[in-house]
Image 1 (tube, one colour):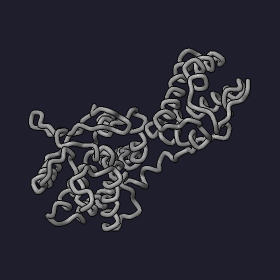
Image 2 (cartoon, helix red, strand yellow):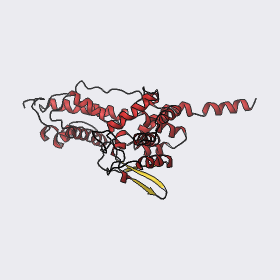
Image 3 (tube, helix red, strand yellow):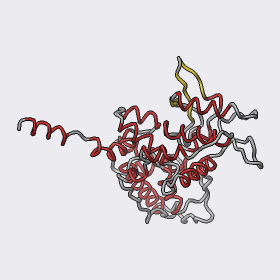
Image 4 (cartoon, rainbow, N blue to C red):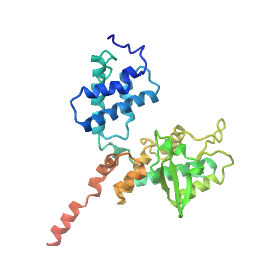
Length: 308
């Protein structure tokens, strides 16, 4: 069979369909549980190609796919890389598609890297205090920062929020959240009364009919939904003003996670707040804090010296 050209190929069933995937898996001497894992990994890969409109995958596309799996543990990412390399090796041997994954490598992330990116309590307070004034923009930015710092919402989740997503349930104010890659709002975060009040202070000065919770105040797109990029820019602007330019907007999410764990909140509750797909993802924050919150040394010292 003639080898398919990368330049002229299309994302077609004969190259990447279920029949080829099943033939590849059948060719491997693996356990039934591994078969399910292989099948899931490859279907996610094909789904990524389709979602991104990639007709003729090339090596960088594999790298981008792996980078998109931000909610996966390192062990899972290693498996995905291995399966992808084996799959394209199989396609190449069968004359279906070039082996574009031969040189793909997993970029290993340091487990403790989050700690350097998390704002301290003092830094978070400094950031929030930089947003002064009672103009609509100032009230909006205060509400956004408070929301990000207390709930750990991503910029895309804040952008997608609508006014109708806030509801009062038995005196608790809840915000429905549409997470990354999701089509429906299937999760909620609890709004502390302070955050809810800041949102209301912002809404009272708004004069528009937009359904969006946060809108632009610029002249050329006034009253349009504030985009994730726009939210990221305003957060970064305030960070620079507070002398915290080394941080990215995502640092507010790290702050929410680490502060919750520092204050004794159960890791499962923190995981639910952050809407992590796996507890292992949340565990990264616990690793960062383990030595800071560990009581073993002090407890041993109390026992040792209390007998003196």
